[in-house]
Each structure stands twice: as structure tokens, then as C-alpha cells.
Amino acid sequence: MQCRALTPARVLRFLQPNGMATMTQNPSILTINNIEVIYDHVILVLKGVSLSVPRGKIVALMGANGAGKSTTLKSISTLLRGERGDVTKGSIEFNGERIDQLTPNELVRRGLSQVMEGRHCFGHLTIEENLLTGAYTRKISRSELKSELERVYHYFPRLKLRRTSMAGYTSGGEQQMCAIGRALMAKPSMILLDEPSMGLAPQIVEEIFGIVQDLNKTEQVSFLLAEQNTTISRSGLE
Ligand SMILES: Nc1ncnc2c1ncn2[C@@H]1O[C@H](COP(=O)(O)OP(=O)(O)OP(=O)(O)O)[C@@H](O)[C@H]1O
Ligand SMILES: [Mg+2]
Image 1 (cartoon, rainbow, N blue to C red):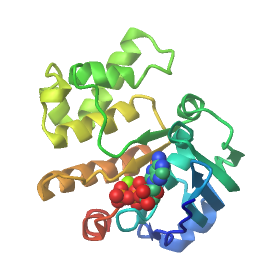
Image 2 (cartoon, helix red, strand yellow):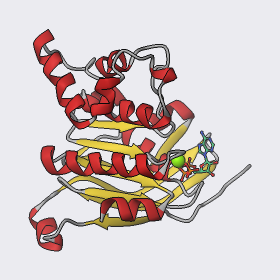
Image 3 (cartoon, helix red, strand yellow):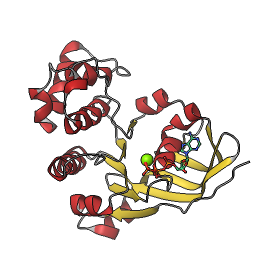
Image 4 (cartoon, rainbow, N blue to C red):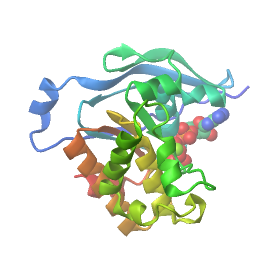
């Protein structure tokens, strides 16, 4: 039997200029309270993890490889179950409601989307087809769908240029943008973003972090961002 408790990942909160004052007036959109996660009924990976994300803010969850960042994000989005993982203690609340028993698609409908580590675009679909899959949970008209696409292209002009290209043949940065854009098509109030910088050139990482900040500022989308590269997340967000 294998049983491991790993160092809890370090949580840093990136406050906007009005800092603490805003936080107190701003209730949390997401609260994780003292959770424990076990894989395969025996592998203890998270113990006593608590954090909160104030509404309309960007919070970065930092830790080394294997610290448990992705596990934390998957606990929230309930994708953990697909990997034989269970939240065995504690609670997770989104917009003041317990979400532990919901399915990932119910969570997307409630405004919580995850962009998984490694991008996961549909390689055989075009960029635009990938984006359209993101609106699958919404019942919207063709014209609304078109304006949603334009909204995503406004933030990611590169995607507009590559809209007819097969996603599998686009660059890593474009695929990361496609994955974030696809999450945006569900009109989330919060996005869980797992290692957006992975394997990308610093210039592209800067561009992506700039867009994340822009989305946060313009559309008040809250972000919980997992990163092992502390330099990148600090310089990109501060
Ligand atoms: N499906 C799984 N079954 C068993 N153990 C797992 C599973 N997924 C992750 N783990 C273990 O849980 C620990 C935390 O993994 P996790 O992927 O959450 O870390 P991370 O902080 O995201 O790491 P990285 O920076 O490499 O992405 C690791 O020791 C990993 O081996
Ligand atoms: Mg990870």
C-alpha cells in the first residue's frame, strides 16, 4: 500500500491596486475548505488544502512538479472521478453552493470551466470548430453563436487568423489560446487554468497572461491559475 502526503502547494493571491479593501467587500466565488484527496482508495495526495478566490480576481496556485496543483483543480471541476480520485474530506463551494456532487457539465452550466494541463484541443477539428464545441452546453441562436465567436476572436486575434486551420497543425501557443477560447465560449464566470505556460516561449506566455488579465479586467472573469513557474506567474500578473 502506498500512502503519501505531499507538501501543500503555495498559494499566492494577486490583488488589484485597491488590495485588501476590495477583498472584504467582495465575497469569494470559490472556497475550498480543508480538503483531502485520495487516488485509487490508497494514495493520499492532498491533505488539509484550503484556499479562496475572491470574485473577479486572479489567484495563482504555485508549487513544484507533483505538489498537487492539477489534483486541486480537478477536485474543483470534479474531473478527479475519471482518474479514480476522490475528495474524502472537506468541502468545495462555488458561488456559495457545495459543488462536490455535481457533474463537470453541470458545473460548466453554472459558470465554472477548466482548461486542462496540456491544452487538449481536438486536433482533427479546425480552430473554429474547436471553439464551437465550447458552446455546446448553451442553447443559443446561430447569430448569438457568431457574436460569441467574435468575442473570442477579439481577445485572441491569432485564432481568427487560424480559424480554418486544423488545431493539430497549429503551434503550442495557438493551441493554448484555442483551449482558453473554447472555455470562454461557455461564458464562464470563473476559469480554472492549469499551467498555461507549459512548453511555450516567454513571449507567447506573456501574450497569454496579458489576455488573461484583460479578460479579468474587462469581463470580470475570475481565475484560479496553477503554475510551477513562479517567475512567469509573478511577472505576468503583478
Ligand atoms: N490518477 C492518479 N493516480 C495516482 N496518483 C496520481 C494520479 N494523478 C496524480 N497523481 C499523483 O499525485 C501527485 C500530485 O500530482 P499533480 O498532477 O496534482 O501535481 P502537479 O502539482 O499538477 O504537478 P505538475 O507540476 O507536474 O503538473 C503526484 O505525486 C502524482 O504522481
Ligand atoms: Mg499539473
